[in-house]
Length: 584
Image (cartoon, rainbow, N blue to C red; front, top):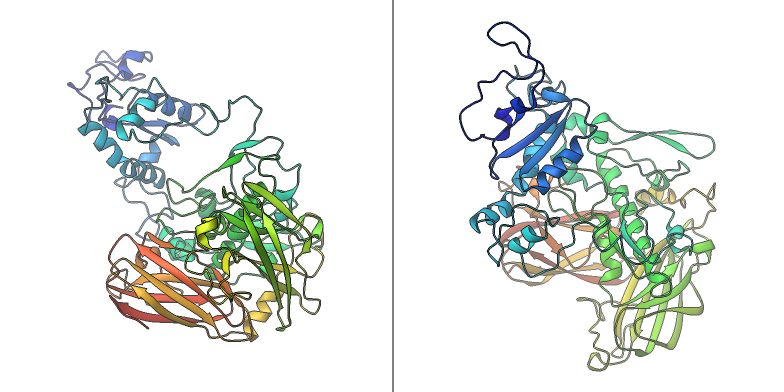
């Protein structure tokens, strides 16, 4: 249909379309030439199919030829009125004048890429050598060079140099795994994984932006006597590619933290699982660094639309727990980690730094839900460069009297940064650390939470549901103050002066009232109320008793007027309004 091409060149064809009658009233057989269009590379091609069997392949081929192309399944009805339940008028159809959700997302995808396409058109679609780059006979390499010639281009993670290397390979997995599985030598059979990922439900603020109130209901669960649970998800969430948080044994990683009561609590628990999944993925890979594994590519950093799976930050650029799980591992060139395989909780130090740390020490602090604490010290020992070092005889213990143990590992060195080249972790080189003193530099800090109960099945995640009752009776106050601030960045110090762990403390930078959607600060926030994109040195912080942490926050836009919102699993919310150079 020429109307769907975005404006075909030349006069409309007078040839009857396939299957239509001519002036003599005779039916004409389908004629391929009746569908031929003279297209420009600036036209939009929308391929519509009833079955959708081959349309994705055809759309890919059309894009490879340099045309702007999207595809829609469901036939021409996909471009017609809003389906029932998706309209803004009580779910009623809009008399054929609207676009379906499929069509809207297809057009949004093109809008998202319009800036790059505009640049290509401004450059005349030509590379440095003057040859046309709009026809991608080289799998897009020419177009990529025209857009940005400063970085190498690979057409896809599963082909074109990565997947088809000298060795064998496979991709995945993409769903929930038990954390200890990542540390098994049998988890992945090859050295380099070109595509691996996991779950990725965004934060509650983004979910409120994605869905109308009647579409925001989280999954419900039908529990079974053997501990498994059937997850029931709405058709809208499934449409947005929701991926289950159940293990392959049908045990729920969400219910491991208790029954969520609403969207806010579901998303909070999802961020915890996102964080621990991606941290375990990277730590498991690091445990076999250069012995078995060479590296991986994570699928994916962000979805190209408002989807609910496999992402480190969402469509609105709001970072998920998975982002900070990855950052926990990758920001530290010398990283201390725990291996949960077989319940041994052994400890290793992964160094991606080219210099040795000759004198390191380790402090492990464990705190129970009842406040019981104990601490262990190890060292000094050497950390060789570019290697994973197993610390013999070192493991993370549990507090016997507690259903859940919070365990903090801190790796220090007495060596000066001029010798090692390591300056410590972000703004926290000696800030409130258990072993800090006498000039020690904090190289790595890592916090785990361990269940004391045995799983009901080898395929079940650990039970952290006692945290629900604990949070009710242990809602504590923490302190927050701004240490440094300019127009685009600030440093916030969080301090826990109590004898209880402050678990899962989250910071958000909120627009001043009237600049967002007008919602009050609290659980009703949506992504439009947040200053995004925003960059945190860390987030979802767990503060041990008498501990403080500094978080650096940077924004692309000016931070002249905003509200800093802080909340946590068992932390009383803090909201305070700030302006430029406001120090608290």
